[in-house]
Image (cartoon, rainbow, N blue to C red; front, top):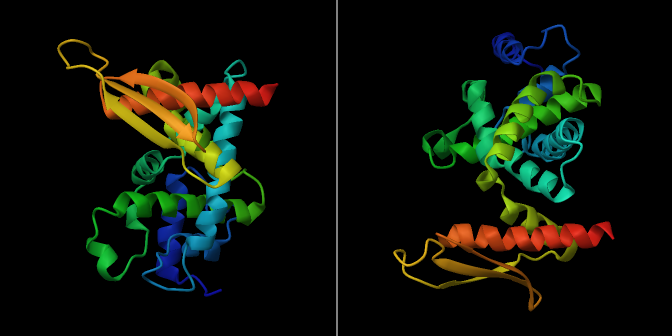
Length: 239
């Protein structure tokens, strides 16, 4: 693995301090450098493998935080909340809070690709988590600064159930079990001035209807159907 040059080392130390960690912490700097290197810079030495590790790490941290702080929360809600916490939108938001874009090495057309920035930042954030985890093979470099974010966000999500992403949780389950995505069938049931719940949605898997729901928009109706389906599945798996 290539050495970290002095200027780059100072950049990485600056980021580590933003995370509230000491520069004397047992960090493998070459891994952290790799975690902040986009594939456009190097086809072989980039963050993709660390992102794969970090994806598992962020899901584990989110699960632990939820388990520790909400012991009475149904497991179906756990999965739905976690799907929001580990979404690209939230991870990119956290990445921006720490100014990760200032440390991410990007080349070529990606430098001007503003549309793909959220995905890049989320990927790099996961890769940084992967690098920190592999530095110690535990969560000691991660939980002190990531836990407070997840606690705050989880509280906000629980206060506003509309933010729960049951569609993502259901999709995750169907992909894990059957390697396929659920199918949504939506119809318009009334004009807006007659009924706020304008759309009705059904979610199907393997020609079996898993759930149905209504909403003011197509997205809301699909989310309502996904919630019914996912909570039903969660109950079945408990028995």
